[in-house]
Amino acid sequence: MADMADTANVINTGERRVHLNLVPGLRQMPIHILSDSLSSRIAAGEVIERPASVVKELVENSLDAGATRIDVAVVGGGLKLIRVVDNGSGIAPGEISLAFERFATSKIGEDSDLDDIQSMGFRGEALPSVASVAHVEAVSRQPGADSGARYEIRFGDADLPEAAGAPVGTAMTVEHLFRNVPARLKFTSSPGGETTRIHEVMSGLALARPNVAFSLTTDGKERLSTPGSGDPRDVVAVLYGREVAAAMIPLTPDENSPFSASGLVCSPAISRGNRRYITVAANGRLVQNRRISFAIEQAYHGYLPERRFPIAVVYITAPFEDIDVNVHPAKAEVRFLREQLVFSTVQQTVRAALADLAPVHRVAGSFTRQPGDAGTAGERRLFEEAAWPDSPDHEAASRIAGNGGNGHTNGSAVAPDLADLAESDQAGSVSTHRTVLPVLRVIGQSQDTYVIAEGPDGIYLIDQHAAHERVLYERVTRQFADHATESQPMLEPETIELSPAHFTELAAHGDDLAAAGFSVEPFGDRAVLLRAVPAMLATGGRSGREALIGLLDGIADGRQTGWWAERMLATIACHAAIRAGRTVTSDEAKALIRQLEECEQPRTCPHGRPTMVHLATGTLEREFGRR
Image (tube, rainbow, N blue to C red):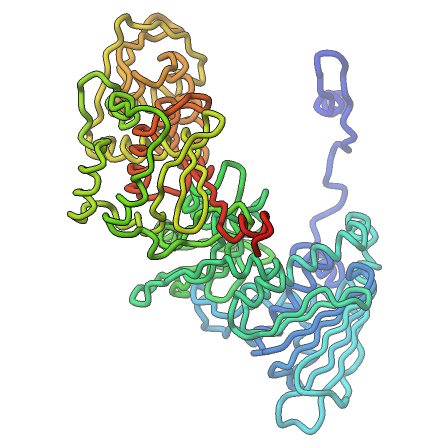
């Protein structure tokens, strides 16, 4: 038997045998009940992972007590000292010792339904868990009481409660955390690292409850102080700076729905390199839910470049019975009963705010809408009277419009003739999103990549590839939704070898590729025949193989994020769009800008890059010393 156990504890890596340091026969004693002291310390491991966990539990108790001000002080990363002082309702003298008993709580009753939790804490585990691994002192007084009570418990050993003078509210002091649990202490990080985690917890709670004034002092230095005004923009200003706060866009909740999303999201002009700046609160509880965070990220699809993430503070309002807050030992994660409904509510609310108020990028570093800058048709003609230094090229303009110069018209193409455009303006047929773009007069091209245009408030540089990509993306998206995409048969079918991963994507999304305009047939075990491509790709200048492989890669990436269809259409648009480094004519540039103005989202390409940047008149005047 010993030989068998030894064999089971060996891993053969192919080069050498590695012996695992395991002890065969784990049951060394009869089954028995753990002592209260040991079980309390084990339970503390579920609730109290590190000093930040203590801060979170104590602050949430203060919130449940109705506190409007909560002051937190820590020393040595919270391992030496944590003190949380609030002005809440306090604890009755006769109940202060009971609060430290396991499963003692004032927040649910024997008959309470655990599916209708409305408080931050409810299990009755936080205080006894903390008291089992630290020296804890609680001082509390209720409003109207002549005196308060003081209770001290040292690593599970309690003194008797005694009367004490104290202000209204509760002060919890936690010292020497984990001194009696060296194994736990060993896995904490440096005091600086633990302080950072505490700051993150306090920041999240302050964002979740902007109506409460929070302060955090670490080693005698104030790290955080919020006014408790109820306006989340004030908390954003404290945490991320006034410039970020000024760029936040308010969300408009649906007041008539039991599910709604409110709060603030940042302008696409500001982003971060990770998801840590996305804050979600559900019914006032700071929560983690990957799908809801993902809904916010999806709402920014096309507004932000890949691997960039927004700053967002989103408050979800939902029926209490629809939220399960009991799925995580530390109550950090929640589960929604109707998660898809919450997902779509958050996504649509954020998306609507971005569509209404997303800005044009300014080179000077500020980002602003241009309301009312669309101008009349007469003003547009006045701006467009200046000539480009080359001759009109209507065939080239037709190519820009997506016709390919082959005589086949696309129903969504815009005619390059300026008179037709002016007539269209007067008829009011242009999208209302034109109001977020100013009237632009094309005056040149730079580096065969950027169209230069003049607007009412400065100079605009338009990335010709990104702008054309946006135009084509919205066109192919409409065609895909209407099942009206056009295919262009290839003169000779192209044989393309695919990887197993590509075959997997082709099998899963072959119908969608066909709907987008591709005709692909199996050709042996590892290859396919490409017989047709979307019509707009016929003039894109890239091979069918390059387009198909890029498309399958885009679908694979998009499937992981839930945006595979958009990735597919964005790849088609990218391959069909004019490239940087190509000279464009006056008519081409004008047609491109007119079509960009008609887009639903003209400010960014499908991958989130800006289509244009704005060099404001004020910036020019300052640079040339005119102001």
